[in-house]
Amino acid sequence: MGLNQDSSNIIVVSALVKKFKAFTAVDNISFEVKRGEIFAFLGPNGAGKTTTISMLTTLLQPTSGNITLNGSNPVQDKDGVRKSFGIVFQDASLDDDMTALENMQYHAILYKVSKDIRDKRIEELLRFVELWDRKKDMVKTFSGGMKRRLEVARGLLHHPRILFLDEPTLGLDPQTRNHIWNYIKDINKKENMTVFFTTHYMDEAERVADRIAIIDHGKIISIGTPGDLKNQTKTNSLEEAFLAITGNVIREEEASGVDQLRAMGRMWRRKR
Amino acid sequence: MSTVYILWLRQVKKYFRSRSRIVGALGQPLLFLVAFGFGFGSIFQRAGGGDYIQFLAPGIIMMSVLFTAVFSGIDLIWDRQFGFLKETMVAPVSRLEIMIGKTLGGATVAAFQGLLVFVLTLFVGFRPYNLLMLPVAVLFIFLVAILFTSLGIAVASKLEDMQGFQLIMNFLVMPIFFLSGALFPLEGLPKAMEIITNLDPLTYGIDGLRHSLINTGKFGLATDLVVIGSITAVLLVIGSYFFERIQA
Image (cartoon, rainbow over all chains, first blue to last red; front, side, top):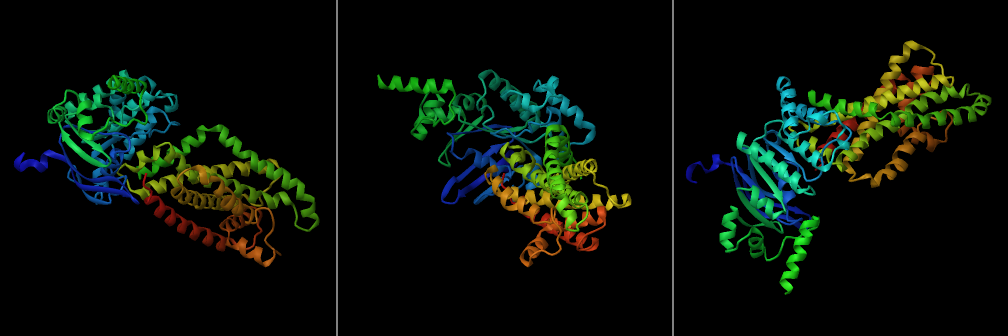
């Protein structure tokens, strides 16, 4: 790393804490994300993933600690930070009573995408996520997967340097999940855009991320490439690594059917 | 500026798209006009008050402005519940611009609804005394619309969900309406009641509208304008203050 460590890191977080009254949601975490890398926060629901993203993206005030995002501080220079990232929230954040096109235009104007490139960029992205044919339809008529794709397109509209994705594929079928990740990886390569995502799907973290931070109970327990994490724990899969590191399997509150079956299978295997 | 415009445009577009909401919101004023207007008309006349429809119409117009404005402001809660607020709050624009855009959008919608009710009153027999005073009437309608939209936004910034909605309705909006002199003259009220009506901002809005539409009233146009103007300014500041502190 050496001297140019600072310029190669697009996100630097040190000793970050967020308390809600007596409850500590994020407990003294520090990490760096390199420019152009795909970085995953892997952990169960309630681990503090969304709270961390909220602080990185100016939506929540940290209790203490320091954040630098693309050279700016989200507490002091909110607008500077806001310009540099796009975000896909965990819950839907589209206006259901507007068309896909109107949702995009609203975003373009808020982010001051200049008039002469606005329409071209919107068309390009809507074609990219295969929603151009549905651009004049109200968002309320869209399926969950289509809404997610539209949100991804919207998050990319203003050429962000960092794309935050909070559980981007939660509740989506495997085909749509693949689809969305293909778009994102494509843009990550083409535009050297940094991607920061949270997930509680092990396979997703392993398949997509360059580096993974395992987070539980508000603390980062381990950071490394999927290979590092496996080597470190001398295990063969990330799932086993996670078990070895945290001492428990991932807690599922909104587990998909497949995940539940897998969990049951594991229980049966252990009993024998 | 473009931020204010796009937020305004969104409110207005959504309003004109929900035709059923527009028509539905005309039902209550019409009912009030007919039931009170014709129901109390003869008593009002006998008591020497003159034509009750003439007296009542400005009150009912402002009632619909009040309701529509407060609800447009409270709309914010839906935006929060459906997550759309986050999209706006995470954008690199000042909170003040967002607040202004939202207020102007809500106020435009409420003022338009008020004008629709004005047209409705004409069918029930209401006749303004001087058409040249109509711009003044529109000014009052718009000011009152801004006032109560910012009140709605201030309230919505403090509410987590629609749970508190009934509370707002029964302990804020209804008293503002019923204690405003929309339905009865302000002269000869018991002292306590007079004090309460004088504290109600809607009283001055309706008084101003009566001055401009039927050339009667209690306080005088200038007083009404100053009171409404300053309360609007104060509420805009309070609304912005609360709005800026929303943690979406």
